[in-house]
Length: 494
Image 1: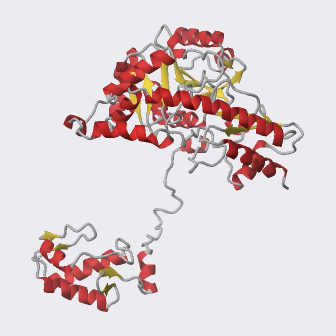
Image 2: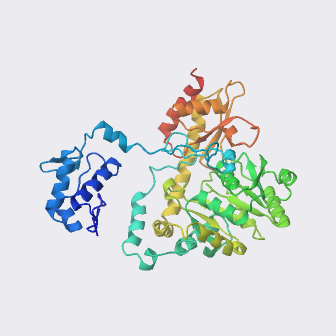
């Protein structure tokens, strides 16, 4: 028995069958065409190549192809080889898309395929493609130093260690983990070693890893209200009982959390730049939250998703850096700083949980993809990462000011936004007499190609305010000016 090795055809000939070799080849090529595996116009392998691969005479291949040609399945053009016919008969084309339907018998009547009941509680967070205006979390891509990045990647992968081509560590590339720990210690005042850093495929997988490790089905969890829909989905998938704790000017209200769920095992917070409101959790509230976690034996998930971008005064230290009892699990991502498709994030794990996290990680995907980790390590060690952050910090501060100015000029009486000392987005509040909801405006804006999530959509229960979440980091000054005008027209045009 011989098999063709051509990447376009998978043909097996069996000399023990009573069917001739010519018939076997004809049947298999015809089935590939009718089944859609060979699209119209596809170039077929040369008959000489197929004859060698199948160890049959070329005449056998020619005879099979001649029959395919005669029945209209293939066509030949001088100098361009043999191709699948571009003009297959309509009945053949339709048969390619026809799939057999099994009639429902009595035993299947009234039955449905079962889906998880948790789906009904998920908030939609399908990714929006492209760089559409005001999309929150979209970084500037024009100023990314791709030349320096490519050098960092090439330097390592020109002569990579052979053992890294086979496998890596469960927690990720150790030099990168050490570099992240050093960076977080210097910039965010974390107390951690590289041993405690675990690399993940982006921030969302980091959140998922935390929840899988510390949450059992039925556990009570505090989340911020309003808050991040992606975390909400992860907790629902784990079967957690979610308690939406209100956020005030000091951040998540620990007093309200104790009242809503005194037995919670996890509190998930964004203390440096609350998502989406942009509030920075006060020092007194941070200490109160840490005291609660220590007394309750609970965990705190600190999502520091865009802490690199702070524009006014000295930024607060991370919650983890204030933690003296090892209760804080810190999550970060590089998608907001570098580019979204990089898909690299990390978790800083308390030492007491390291073994548990590694066990859970082993059950998910063995190890994070290694291809870009050495490049990022070199990028950080050579100082390019810090330089890029400093450049973006200046740029985003300017763009925030431009957005506020454009809103004051074009959207007076419609929207109002105040400066934030950090972040990549602003919340533009709706004027009380605007006569529309933020959902209505978001729908109108989306029809005009603008992504302006409604603030009310981030609340669990009744919304305490109407507004639009406007990302500005990925927009040029001209785009900000133009697109604020487009947003205002979407509001006022009836």
